[in-house]
Image 1 (cartoon, rainbow, N blue to C red):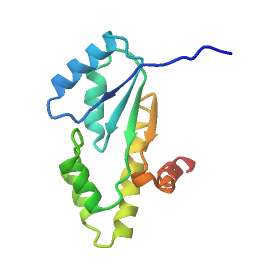
Image 2 (image 1 turned 180 degrees about the horizontal axis):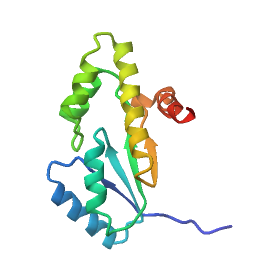
Image 3 (image 1 turned 90 degrees about the vertical axis):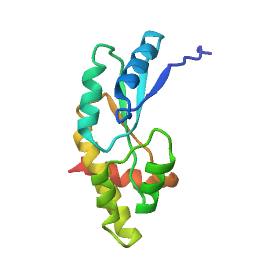
Length: 147
């Protein structure tokens, strides 16, 4: 009975190589009618802070992406093969410091939890992207909020 309602969402990349170009694109999208933004996964809060500061004149809700890394191999693939994804060397080093995949997975959860805690009060929301559809990883990341 009720009319269907759609919202116009956009993607944004706080860690873009050419941040000025990304900011310009963001502002043009908002001026064209974007109603909210979802970011690429964020691993460096300083990049998010800079991005948010530069887009503050274009007020739309921004939801930050959190992607727990499943392994060192997964991190390398995302960093090297997925356009728009950039994982800082410090994070890559952390995940690579674990030889066993189960330990690396736990470190990936810790990294995501740290990003969640740092970002949650800076943005309008957070969305978790569970690696390989593993909802349990998203639940583990969110468990940090219970404490």
